[in-house]
Amino acid sequence: MGKLYRIIINDSDDLSDIYDKEMHDIYIHFIDQIAESIVAYCIYNDITGVNLEYAKKLVWGGLNGNAIFSETLTIEEQLEAQTLLAYENSNITANAKGEKDCD
Image (cartoon, rainbow, N blue to C red; front, side, top):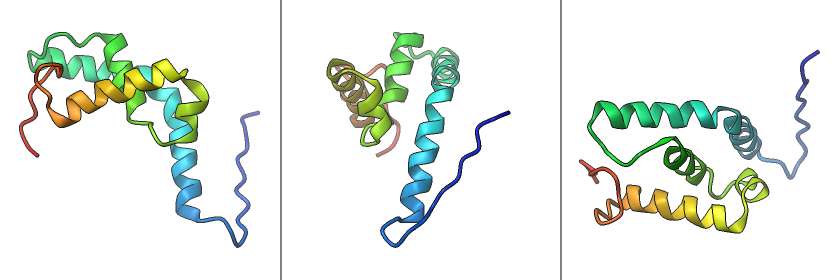
């Protein structure tokens, strides 16, 4: 039988925080699929240098700030994921794989 998730809410719990945590915890089960989509997007748009490993690091970088990020990755992996995502988000072209079209 599948897992049954039950949320108990008391005066100190904020429903949106609980929802965010649950969504990010579930999110890790789709890291490979999301990374594969990033690679496919890059291939389609002629963005070179993005392989599955790089794409997974970008996906993990998006989980920064969530407990699952620090509970799953080593400090070195966290820093690498944060750094690569920052390159892409800020369009630091010396290190980013693609060019950002908007701000």
